[in-house]
Image (tube, rainbow, N blue to C red; front, side, top):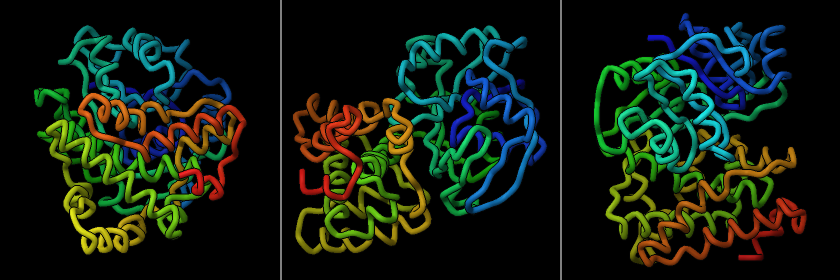
Length: 335
């Protein structure tokens, strides 16, 4: 099958570089002239936990001349429907989109091309884009850490899903999830806690987990997401073999204390990760807070489950975007 990666941001660059390094033939597409020019001139530079340069076939979205069976979507969710409408024109008649975004973006894809052509993947690793064509891998370079959980909300399977799994498995451990919304929710609670607080504090995941004041907030955010999932009758799936719902749900002080102690250990292999939302804030562009913590708050309202910590993260980040606050650990006192 012919496929493409749309989005030359932090994750899209590294995903494309790993695929091309392993002999995959595909196109990397982006709308940014500087990004595509840099990749054409120098290839993709991957640094951090691994170091290599890889040439990749790439083009601007105004230069696309062929149709694809599969497009992996790696863009931010700002104006998501418009982006999906654009790239849907690059698909073959029955072609599909696999969204690699955070939150629950499959509903946007389905809105444009239908449920049966919408697939999703929760990415279990992180990266930081340093400049056009250059991205830092901030998770450990191990297959178990470079993990993917993929599937469809309604559980349908076909040749496209099989090919998506094959491609993902080129880079890291790819897990087909029968309960895909449960896998999405597992990633969502991690992002709500650590991406949200990374943007609030201006810190890495490891720094958030290390400090007791921010770790306490992270634990409460995780607990809220677990409670909302219970109310919505969503079974949260394990992440990289770890049953997060079991580890971080609590009904007494002892289990809460154990979960609190586990957090730095659980985040060790992703300690260097800097939230993409923080990267956006530093660039002065809107971030995805409403598509991450906003999902937990939205479900909380729908299922009558309070989410005060998620709500406060959203409030603080919108104030940071409005220049009323700056990312800092001083913001922890606002909780």
